[in-house]
Length: 352
Image 1: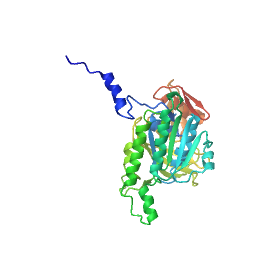
Image 2: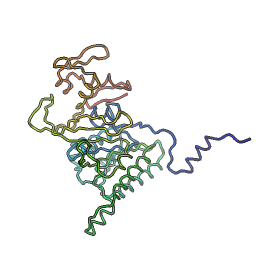
Image 3: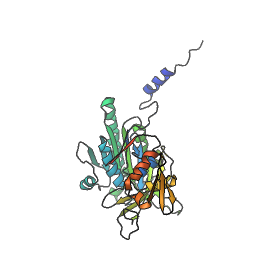
Image 4: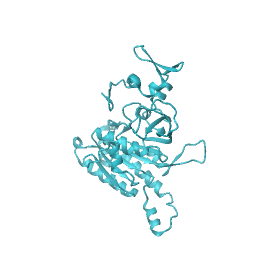
């Protein structure tokens, strides 16, 4: 009589025979806010957070779209506030300490390790060596860690350096794209069951097809491998705090499209306002989301929100944009899909 198949023995044998194999689900448990409630929601279906550990998030866009401000500024600041250690890899030599500090980033060695690197293989070695040492630490003693690479587009393949030294810049024959794909793919596999995440920025170039979005540089490999992709298109912000049109340019109006996400419907977009004097406006974009969801109904020249108690709140559009009387806070609290208790604070939201 044949012996019954021993599934538990097979499972144990897998982990021994295949190095690095992880069995089971690795749903994110730690999340970081992008600094904007609407963008958070389009990524994660939650208003309070948008960037998960255990995954790779790619933020791509044209110059002056606000990529570095979000990735190397706001996300790093919000990660540090959750006791997540940040390793910031600067390939553009553009992230000045005073600029980061102005965005609220703690640049002390206890909170941040900033590395200036130009080579893809060097970045890969740093991350691989870190993960190897990280796994040697007992599970309960492992810190939460976020890698930020700003940017992928400025990283170089060894071939490019050799050609430059030889004075013969004839192209890398696709080697850079292949190495970037290998970098992102390996990071996705390494981080899956660890409290380590990654946020990368990248450049785009215009498509010759006017009906096609800008193309993210570095080949398609990083697009397939990344867990979350956000595309940013910059425009001039020529509105005041109440939504009135003005002639002065007071900041960036960045159209953020969530091209890829597993936590909400992809290809949704929101306009995030980044005034020069105050930084990212955390409430920008919420009005448009709530109007699209038909939570805000136009009544004459004003908009009505009916709360869960049946009470009607009637405001001008400018009052919603400025969050007059905390009306946007109220809608977020009642609209939260997971029915979590959201406590409004001066710095944002605490979810319990």
